[in-house]
Amino acid sequence: MINNFCIDSKSKNYLILSSDIKLRYEVVVNKICEYLKISENKILENPDIKYVSLPLVDKSGNAISSLSNTELLMREYGLIDNVDSNRIGNEITISQIRDIISFTQISAHKTKKIVILNGASSMNKEASSALLKTLEEVSSNCSFILLSSSSNSIHETIRSRCQVLSYEPNIYIEKDSDFHNFFLSKHPFLRELDAEFNIIDLVENISIAIDGLLEKRLDPIDVSNNWSKFHFNLILCVVNEYIIYNCKRFIIKSSGQSLDNNFKKLIDIYNMLPNIRKNFNLNINTKYLLNNLTIELAT
Image (tube, rainbow, N blue to C red; front, top):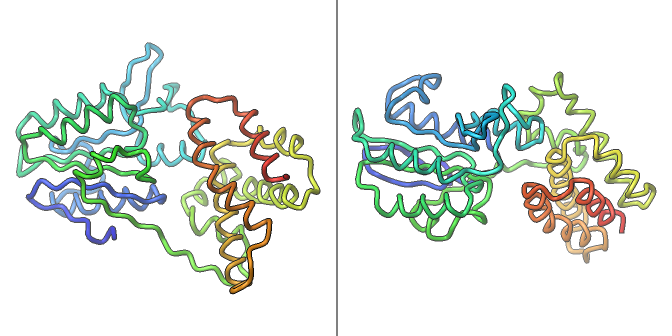
């Protein structure tokens, strides 16, 4: 459990797993600030703290900084793809890990150094190998805190050198609860962005289209064409939560009954979503991915 996470004078490494990007970061920041006795708005200015996330890349192709946690959240939903005209990189690179290595080779100003690697599953193969070597060889008093939504993309040997803590909020669904409230209860951050991005209407439109596909009332290519106007990551997020919501409702209402075909189909699509997201991150044609997804929902 994430409640076992603590920062002290010892060199402990953590892998903190949660799909709630906002919560996991806030827990880490609170614990660090408590230990170092500093305010949260000063944490990234502290010389003993190194924060690394997806890089912001300038027009010359140089990584100039890392995404803040808020920017990482917005990217996760597909709401931004650049910051101040700087492109967001798709992976944490070896050059960023080399910066971490240089950071760990300098003695701490006070008791210890702390590395926050936000979105650690975005490391490319070279970065992952370099981090593993660093974890094995670092000699200074330094703790590494890796944040990720899933452990699947974290190399097993890296996981073995970290204390793995996970947290997923337990969202209780009443029998009459609607999907709209369920979704926003799991993604409250999106409420703050509704005025700018019209999130609530987008979620409603996507969920209505999913219903139409499952009931074979809508043509999948027509839906795909419409969804191509939306944010791809947000579509995947809504589909993912729609499946979880409806499977939980099915279990609540149909305890002891055999699974119907729609339930089985939703489970199959749920298992496909990580691969769809991976292909999207690899720049596979978005329209092709949307066509496949809507056809699967309508089949």
